[in-house]
Length: 350
Length: 247
Image (tube, rainbow over all chains, first blue to last red; front, side, top):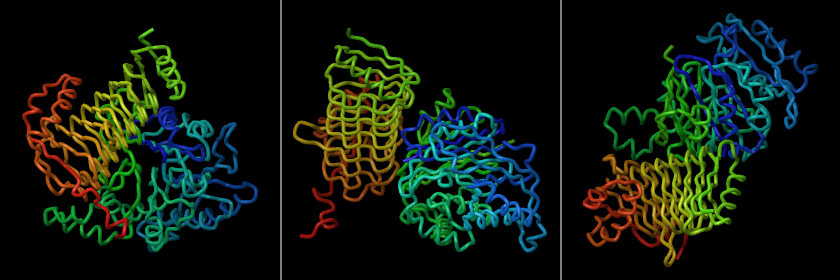
């Protein structure tokens, strides 16, 4: 059991982190104080052209030098600084969060059609697999993940997320069940533009992991959710699927449902299921995926986890609980429950 | 003291429930709770016939769990599992409710004006005079009455939208019955369930339940009573005998 909430302002009007902190804390019964986190899009306008790398260092003196050297080899560190944190009684600062604004050197990947993204992905995978006291947990442009082991309000106050202003937010309140809670295991999970929060359990993790690792991704966080971030990166960014088709691959209709579709639909859905069989995710889940332009929410195809949506003006809210949405926006309208396996998509229009 | 007002704004469910219990212990018959937002477990395990609790707002999950006797009226939507393992009493929801409504319910009545989520009435049961009832005014999502062992479930589709449009209806049902207003496409039936048209005698049996539902929401019962109903019942008393046991 975990609690999730996401909000997108379709006109890119920014909101600070106060509301989402209150909404997430309202769902404390869904967590266990072992992990909470937030991601906000639009927070670094002055550095929006550079990759914002958020890093957990075990120890600055021992581990930062190596990462600096690696980043220098692959591009330019435009700016770097410690991420400001504020001591909280119940958070033991076992890692030091750091941020880099990084420009990859495209000439180093001449054969790639997307050299910037491929260099950053390579760096994230290399650094996180090496486990040399550094973990890159956020690597997109103009966005940042803030997470730690603690309760939602503690983690929010630790980073003072009310000081950040974004047009798209995700937040997660963790109740780890299969592996111990730790800073890197807290959600959101991020790669490039993609951020993921997840309530549930991906029982097909082994199959999904083998599949995604065959494309060069490396799973290193001791928990299932990170495969979702890598799967959406592969399916949407690399293979060019729409968000809707990607969700169709991850949570496809049952065969007997496909058999009842019109011929053309059948052909499409069969092709998706056959092509992406190993990407199919089983088990109970409710997931929110974000990138710079959209927010997507969906559940497993037999709906074993809660998810409700609501709207207010230009804003779409997706959460585990209606009350959490109402905490952020008391005048929310059109509260609905998405159908099992069917995505709800909010897209920016400005 | 017969009427008590409680302001739940910012109140955690533990002190809220303590206030409710104290009020009932002091003889209150009317308890009105304002500004409810996400507090779980309201009225859980509460005993007291003749007590009415009005919840203004959106209560959290497991409303009225193990409750025995009181009536809870919600002016708003409810989240997951209102009426979970409820023993007796009534829950009336002026709105919709989340997944697993009336989960494992063993007695009493739950009335939902609009729609319910997935797995409504999952594992409802009955024993002798205890026969739980769930009535849904709108539509129900997939796996309605899953593993149902007893009790009565009625889905009305008052708004005109079809009450059942998803799979797994009565999946694993081995006791009790589900009444759906109108017809049900065979493809929505779950494993172990079968459908028959409700006879006049059977419709007569659910008439008081439909009248009670209509009265509580101030709607006209006559068109609902004039309609035809489909009855979903177990295909056999032990639908999975061959799956889990060897004879």
